[in-house]
Image 1 (cartoon, rainbow, N blue to C red):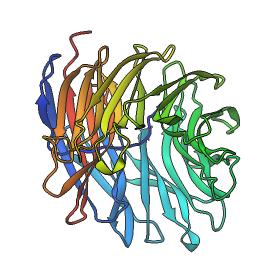
Image 2: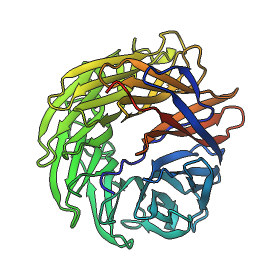
Image 3: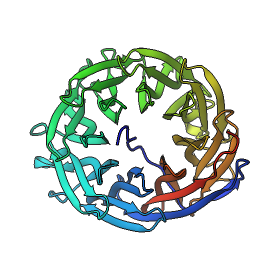
Length: 457
């Protein structure tokens, strides 16, 4: 399974069509909610859809005294195929952050307590059909070292890559590679030039490019004591560095998301400093790591890109949240989505959603392209919504909104949107959590939505 997108997750419950689509009918097929627990870390860690349309989720569940890892599979019709809970040998704080599926196995990355209660990176492998746990692989670089897995990807040969963090002079990025039998192939760490306690480096995401080599996105702190985007391409076979690129200015340049196109070129987005916080997006040559272009987008005073994706029509799409006045106390952020040209980074269109009233808090979580539509998922408290999940369908060519779907929250509930996934059949999975402020209860949630074929292209 080349280039599996890792986890960065969303939400769902009752999905309501608010604004019709001129491209044809769209249907909400089903919704599911699964109780997770009341612990603060509880929530969806990842979601993925296989070629047959089966949806797999993973996340942290349980009470605050002992969190576990829950992984579940839902059939294309929304029925539960299986659900499994992993409680590690320490019977304590197990956490899941990412999921991938390939070769009949479901892989989950996270962490589990080891000797002395120091966290170990964890890789679980489940049988995709039955949910039987095939392997549980804890990893530790040494005693009194805390480590975690944040992202997981699988290549066509069945090798599994886990990216996350380890402790060194502060935090260091950690990358692990396992063969199809679960044996460790290689381990790499990345430690930036900053000194402790400012050296807070961590790997955020790993993807496999079309050439079969893993590419890792790192939040890396430089000698200026400020972070940069760091992107490294490793050789799948031995973990040697094929290229390494860092990008940023002497400010808080913090990456959030990574994408690779069909040609193997690499895109990263996040927050960049250019007088004020702005969306910052870069494109790197996939063969040598050279910077091809950089672009800033601004819709307010404090802007933060959440996700990036590409299509096969030369489009690069970035979404996130913008604060129109820079005042964090009035919670009036908007959702802003932009399209740029993959060839040269030129701006094509910008689309902003949200009201600027106090408490009108609109945030984006993920973006995908399917059937000629740009799908933007997030949460909204702008009237008439009240902490509801929201999914926009935008025309890829113009940015015009063609449909809107809402996942309303119940009284005292808040939505925590996290991830979008699309299937080959053109259906969309909208996933994340609901959190009840009165009880502390967290539910995993997923909705499947079918988009009609776009007749305008």
